[in-house]
Length: 235
Image 1 (cartoon, helix red, strand yellow):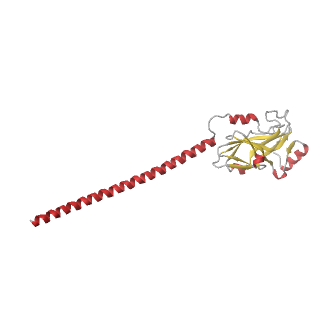
Image 2 (tube, rainbow, N blue to C red):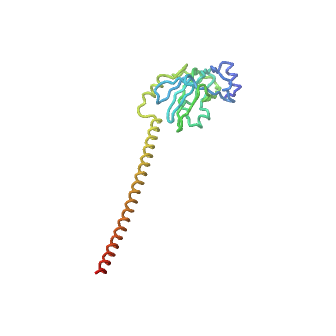
Image 3 (cartoon, rainbow, N blue to C red):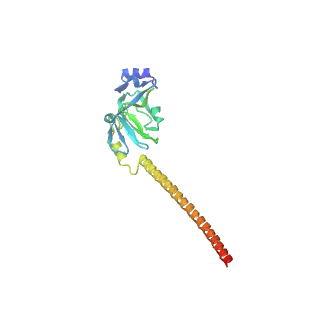
């Protein structure tokens, strides 16, 4: 793995090219890549202009496709690996990416993020969000990367179509539905408590009424008895 000094040396040789390089993003043994101009959220079904918006909001349970602000080029002597900055990992973001960037790759990196937290995740335009570690090969590769992402500068239509054509609810929509169900259950529980309280009040009132009627009947019986005694003595 290359140190910061070695990264700069290989950049001078042309084995590593980082367009829009920012020295503040160079770390002791890695380089932090920044959030690029466009993104795609699984539930929105359309590209988002992050540069225009100034930030990217990823709802809970949603996937986002993002591109890096920097464009890189690796010679056949250099491979790289990529990971999410721990700052965002602690906030519940998960980076879904391949195990490495092959020698010979050229272009912007397209990455998928998943928000596994119950809160909205926010990334700002040009904010460092992932980090690249560079590795020198002992023996140069015989051929460079020639895959579908070679010389890519924006999100591929195929990737967008994949998320657009997915059937069923997204995890985020499921979470929202569950929140609605939970809210309805809580409201129903409150209504049941109110109804139970009302029934309890009616029961108490009925019991008091029964007690009043019983006392009234006892008093009436006593009154009748007294009247009967008075009438008997009057004779």
